[in-house]
Amino acid sequence: MRKNVDLNCDLGEGMANDNAIMPFLGSCNIAAGGHAGNEKTILETIKLAKRHQVNIGAHPSYPDQKNFGRKPMDISFSKLEESLFQQIHLVQKLAFTENKTLNHIKFHGALYLKSLTSLNLAERLAIFLSKNFNGIYIYAPYGSCMAEAARKYEIPLKNEGFADRAYLTSSTLVSRKKSYALLTNLNEVKHQVLSMVNQGKVPTYDNHKHDIVVDTICVHGDHPKALEIAQLLGPLLATKSTLNH
Image (cartoon, rainbow, N blue to C red):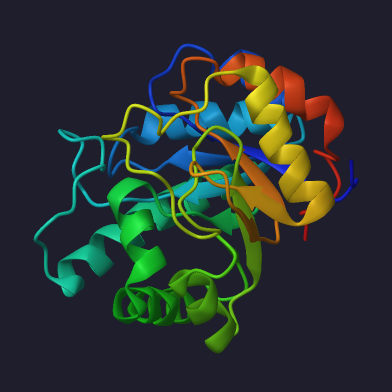
């Protein structure tokens, strides 16, 4: 396996396995209060990441803890922008108290998914990031609208792939409403990651393969086999050295 792809995970979301998963990661995406988390959990996760030399990222979302940020919200962009600023700034501020810098930003849930297919939203988010968090990486899938917008507005980009989700195309995932959305077989997970990293191809649920570029691979912290996947992939990836800046 290529040695310049890192493993990331969404943490600080109230799961019980953060302590066990963190040692296998190169970067973590910390719930910033929108869909989960609060100042206490953010600081705890930052300290855990610092202990294991893991890069710290903010994981902002629609301000909707009731639905875990996984349902689209009817919200004005100005209100969304205000919430995102508060979420990201909180993680950034708390990281500073631990002498850490914010390495990256990764949107969560419904906001993440919409930014992949809506160029209008992606560009507005890119302008927001460029104005408020210039120079910080954005994690987004290869070929997505968010990746395109990041390049247009000169935002540092890390192309993200998923270890535990079934794909429709190289930049879109099978809806969580489908029974086959999550990959739970560890051999299947490993096959998908090896294909993305070594061959630059992602297998889709309908047995096609699409071109893909990955700089970082995500495992979701709330996946039922998150720890097992992290234990499988962590040793295969250069988790500690590739994304620090």
